[in-house]
Length: 62
Image (cartoon, rainbow, N blue to C red; front, side):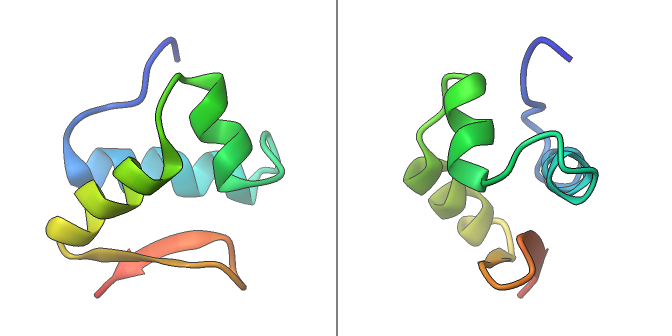
């Protein structure tokens, strides 16, 4: 994939897949690879009903 999706549900699914399959070690590494700011991404998803669980390295429904 050349870019991260904009739809919140698809974005969460894509990020969780990348982190689960260990394509990226951290959310920050994934964001930098796609030219996104990790804090802005977290804020966008938080506004759409998701939160990032650091210990499990995945976004979840709030």
